[in-house]
Amino acid sequence: MTGTLQTRLRGVDHAAYVTTDAAGTIRFYRDVMGLGTPHIITAKGWGPKDHPDFVHFFFDIGDGDRLAFFYYFGVDPDPAMPRPDYHLAIHVRTEQDLLDWRARFEEHGIRVIAQIAHETIESIYVRDPNGMIFEVTRPLRELDERDEHDARLSLEALLDVLGEDDPTLEKVWRRKAELIEKDHENGNENENKDEKAEG
Image 1 (cartoon, rainbow, N blue to C red):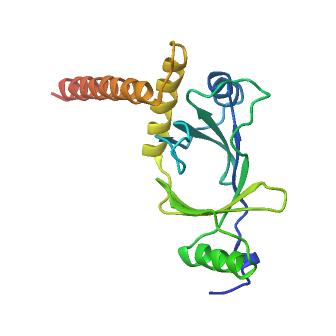
Image 2: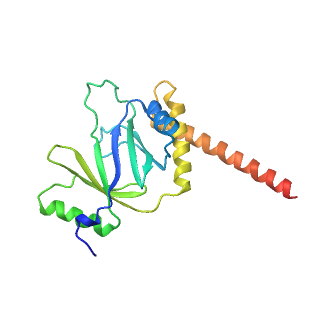
Image 3: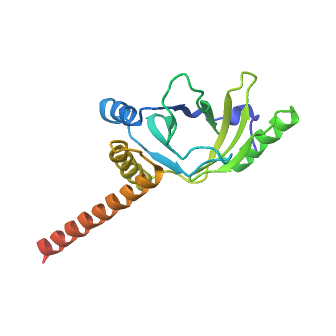
């Protein structure tokens, strides 16, 4: 492997924040700013048993960098209430790079909080001296148009559910299934029209 461990860092993967207004956040970054939505993660809990269900959605801010937000279901939007941590994620290219960073942190007595393989990335997490979570992440695969399509459907489902009383992750998943079914039906209708036009 060439280069020092530091020179194998590839810049910011994403900066992540918590939003209590997911609909407004989506409309601002997607609709007003026109940023693409390359990926979204939906999860039941996370780590500790009392961790709330969440969606973690990403906006493309150019050059492979992303701005990300967490929306937690059932969390009081009171701004005085403590909220989950913000974090900064730096990307590396390979599994070996990730393991080398883990080893470096451990050599310096820095506890690795977790190593998690998400849907499309694998990450390690540590805390800096300020208590901020710092993530080093590597791709498990490249994102493509299927991920963008999935993100679009997931965000539409989230926006629909946020307009209802008592939004939950299960409601988002049900609504997304309806949108997928509708999308599939529309795709079949378009294919049938194309076949008739050719025939």
